[in-house]
Amino acid sequence: MPCDEKVIDDRLDRPENLRDRLSPRQREVLDGILAGNPNKVIAQKLTLSTRTVEAHRAAIMSKLGVSSVAELVRATVLFSDSIDSLTMMSRIYPGLVSFWDNALIARFANDLHESAFGTRVQDILGQSMAQLFGASCVRQSMPFIRGVLGGKTQHFRQVVQTPGGRPMTFYSVYAPQFDGLGKVEGFFAFMIDGREVPEEAGSMDAQQPIADEDG
Image 1 (spheres, rainbow, N blue to C red):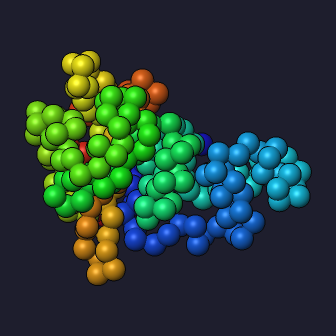
Image 2 (cartoon, rainbow, N blue to C red):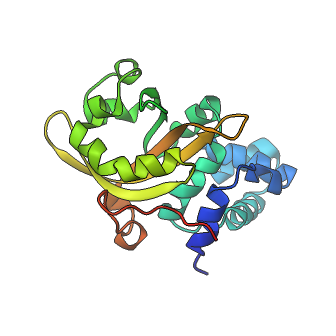
């Protein structure tokens, strides 16, 4: 049954943590999934059958409203409400994960940035987005940057030039991070190889903004 993308976008814009909608056992299974454990290992740790874990996994996916790689990319941000959880998620996420503050300065980046840009993570932290991705890329992405800093999740395709001049196409999700007063203090960036996501899931490029709409 195809997932309603508007439902996903609506959920992404809600400040509540959807983990609260899961049963205690489903949260345990989810923690195992986020830790990168296969069903068999999760089953052993929770003293369950593999079939039971598979059933819980299916229920979790249903409650999150995801059924494809593209949808999973968007749903991932639901569980990345802190740097600690982001660090855990970045270990198993099949792409680039970073956090940018309001001044577009990198405050977090996972290890995959090193292979993509040839720069150590510790050297990336404190850099501006323009320094890492290039001023041209940032200009093209500015509609999405403004959108996410305005509190709306953004999802789009973008082409990034690596330091060696090699262009890389990503399917990107920018998700806002709110402070205790409900103000946007920065955003998470999830970037996966564009070849891993169907064209119809991210057909817009960085010159055609996809800002989630209210209503």
